[in-house]
Length: 606
Ligand code: BG6
Image 1 (cartoon, rainbow, N blue to C red):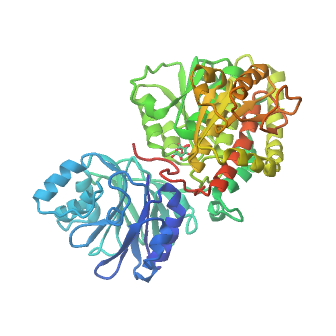
Image 2: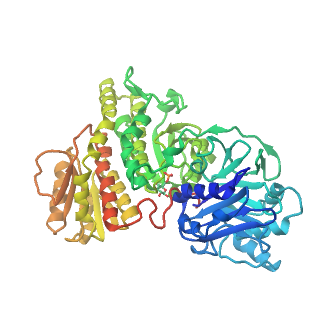
Image 3: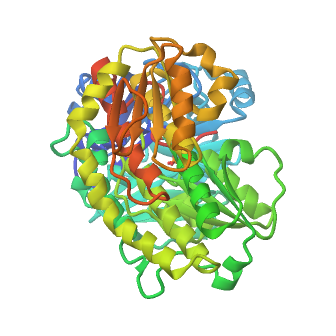
């Protein structure tokens, strides 16, 4: 996934675009570039590396009031100066920045080479620039680009600038997000609102198959065939500073610290103490339709999928509805049997993850019922689902997801209570859980204060090359999240296993150099987990326990005790120390915490 940004107005475009690129860098950070429209030609700078490396080419010297820019997450062609965007035609008149994949690029390239076009990069994107140059018959740029796009197979969020049509940008969307920002005699375009919130909070989300001509005085949206379309601007809820790191060294640490307030926002207005249930205004399915739900299937990617697994366990426990979570990328291609009385729930922080979008579209195509649990308001998944639960967790910029994991688990707790109280979850149980949810933010804050203890545990893990995370029942899902966090930011190979599975193979890898982190709540499976710990210790494996206070029947190499709340919410609390553990292991290993190698905040390509 890449980040594209554009500006047309009366101000100098370069500083606005570079600032936008810095904001979008979590979308991809292996190369960056900019094209500023001058009087007669485009001024281009691009190179491999981060946006700060692009700054060294001094693009601020480019004068001009319209332009486009890009930060890349490579799909076609390795990160390099020549594969960085923007891509131009031979004359340098047209510049294109693109987020997505052109599936028929090879065929188009062959035709273009036959036409004498010379390619200067290995990217699929370059075909756009050559096609526009070949097909420009002088009609409005959006008509030319529309004609080009009718020949394209694949996904794109695209922005085009033409030196001979100063003051006009053309943008288009098919699968990858494009947002227009409406200013006062100026317009902005971006892959997401974080790049333009400093200048405007009034935005229009382009739909798939839409193209827009953007000028300082406004914009027009059309279909690729030229039929006008209409769109209603929406307002970005978050202030500009919400997208800044503030006093924290890393966005990840800031977002970990924001969890108590984020959870308060997820809960806000949703605790119904009269009926001891959860009120979910965004779930538009009638209660009787929710009563007909016989199964719940949760779909997502990465951390969203794991938070979905925590949700599935809660729905099965509290509403007694069979539920499970599945990787959206697998679900969409396995020709799943869609059942009328199954509720499909798409989980996504960004709301733009391509595989999850496609899974939702697959369910809808087959007539299934969908809802979303999403953080980004107005995002594609939210609009595709049409109903669901917004997290209100605030912007999450760090590539590794932390606060939205916690808020998603809270959202699922609310949904499970809601579904359960429509069935046989008692008033007393409803009250017990509502009471516990009200305590949750303070409980999380108390755990965050124990950071120094957790940081010292990190010293036991940082030198290792491999680590295991184990747990039982909901503890296994949390173990999976712990392993993913450690992998994502410390590049330490971490695997999560159901605790009892260890002896069926992975135990062979246990050694004094391989620590095991155990999710060890004091529940009915406590003694079973202790037996597994004994098996590990018998083979010299170091054990770190994330557990509840009380006498430990065996000695751990390290432990963090988290006060118990309620069995349904304890897994969520036991996850908090693991976020800090991963953070401090990464600090000790000196990796790039907010922009780990090879990753991106959400992947909008297949
Ligand atoms: C990955 C992110 O690209 O996408 C993960 O690095 C995230 O943190 C996953 O969990 C899914 O993203 P989303 O936005 O659909 O929750």
